[in-house]
Length: 308
Ligand SMILES: Nc1ncnc2c1ncn2[C@@H]1O[C@H](COP(=O)(O)OP(=O)(O)OP(=O)(O)O)[C@@H](O)[C@H]1O
Ligand SMILES: [Mg+2]
Image 1 (cartoon, protein in one colour):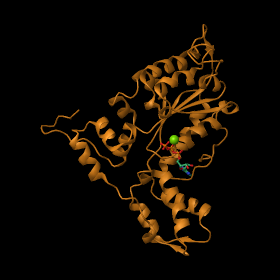
Image 2 (cartoon, helix red, strand yellow):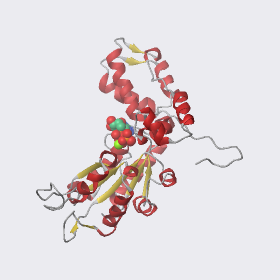
Image 3 (cartoon, helix red, strand yellow):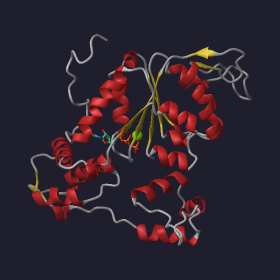
Image 4 (cartoon, rainbow, N blue to C red):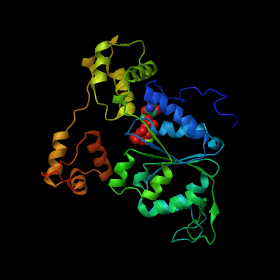
């Protein structure tokens, strides 16, 4: 790839708006990581732009001539996941009428993007680690191994420490995936990038309307639990609901946050998240995400011990 730094890389990424120092640092790291053939772990709250980063890593790397295979690990049932990943041979199990190429094989020459990696069952994480290490895998029912050369990018909306603490990821896999860990900062920590992003989305959606200072001020004070995705949705909603030249703070209808209610439910079930999720009719991962967004944590027990 020639001498280092002979080409000055643009301090941006396709489709990404923002110039905050933390974003500049991120662009720089993405450009560098894309050129190195090492696994990358992208972490950040929901809606911060992890998928955009993963796609940039693919588009800027040698893997761009291959496929970008996007796997949402939360979307598969435990029983189907292994077959989808590794494929199968005809007759591997009841109902498998033909051979099936898996996602790992499809990523040959390209990028395997493992989104929500901490939703992958632990026994599959062990198999995945082996494929990453030696590039060989065995489709279900196959007598021999197949080879696939791919670039690995994983994403998680939990910090590595939290994933480990909750037993959601095997430490050996985490160390392998996180050779380079790229943290996408939450929107509320990006200073005036909030205005820039708002202007950018507005330029795509508003026809002639202008954003009032009071609106921008309110944006700055809001916590943006849904990050850039939420900002985009807010701007799109305003463009539909407001028919005035100037869009002001009073036009906003930020969602009401029922953190009090959620905490009460959790207290009632003595912080058994699984039980609380069942009571609320949501999945455990949704509840965990909501707790993170609302910064709800189990209080420490008297005496300084951490409750578990
Ligand atoms: N810096 C940015 N500039 C412009 N658009 C952005 C930026 N970051 C994110 N977006 C947009 O915000 C939305 C959410 O981004 P993305 O899907 O990459 O987030 P994510 O971190 O993968 O979210 P999740 O954790 O929910 O999967 C997308 O529509 C994306 O195009
Ligand atoms: Mg995503």
